[in-house]
Image 1 (cartoon, helix red, strand yellow):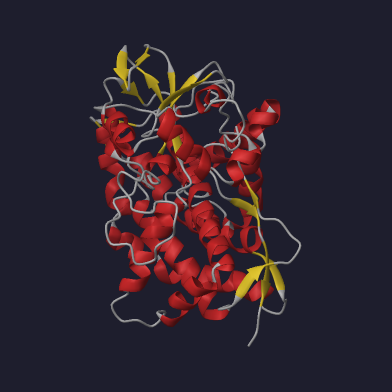
Image 2 (cartoon, one colour):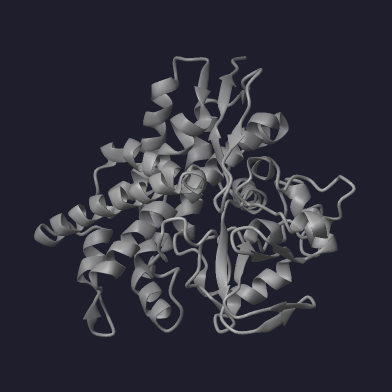
Length: 405
């Protein structure tokens, strides 16, 4: 579903809404705006049917209500991998979710993530070194995607030199999967086997990383079963990579198109209090929020005059909430010094992103490192920045040209 500008009504177009469509992925803002205004609780007939709320308050209500809206369904289409996913804690409801999340919280605390900052700068600068002698580079493939891959690989305790393999798995799962489900299932099996092998290695040789913590930790007096342990590792690898590289890439794309914003951030690189950068990072997270989740309706309910039935699928588009004019003035505009910014880039409610402190750190380090060494750049002339569709949106190809003064 592209921007609804033809004679067909927005409601009629919403019936064919497809979050996997590349046209929608290129510019979702106008679609969210039209749907929010005319059919804020839309119903698409695709993928066995699913509801699409688009207003901030509705998305907030749904995300907080695990009794009416279960997290057992986090992806649409649900049969992409031929099975329901077990990726704790996001696919679990309380009380298991609460206990699982509590177990992981200390690992992703602000203090621990701050300790990873020097390592992340080292990774970013090594990547910049690789294209420092060229006038052109791909901001997505050569830079944005590689920072979170390397960081999470080290945190999990798997080989960071396998990052090209991780990228391939994620692309086959999240980007190409809807069009080739057989290959997506193969990629998921390969990822599962890789992580299972690493889990066995960590059991034999504990190393103190996140995988070891998951192996050793007990919930309600019992250690994680093999399925939950594997699912948690799958989630950390997938969620720790694609979401953050999408945020980094989208922010770089914006800066490539907006020299004024680029100059503001370059001038504030050595600002002692970091206020300019803090506000800018929160605004980038709001405007370019990459993640849309899904839910399953757990009991019959009514919202916005619509009857949602038990078993119905529902898309939970946090990016749409972040563009709601009822909550944000000029919501489609990037305002670097925006002060009121209670965005949902990391979701909201019990399932708010566990790795939000890690993602914030990686985003800021990635942009600071790039702007310090490449302060002036733009989208390469005659090229197109390609965005992925689906429930994680971000640039996958971004040819950039460096400029010298």
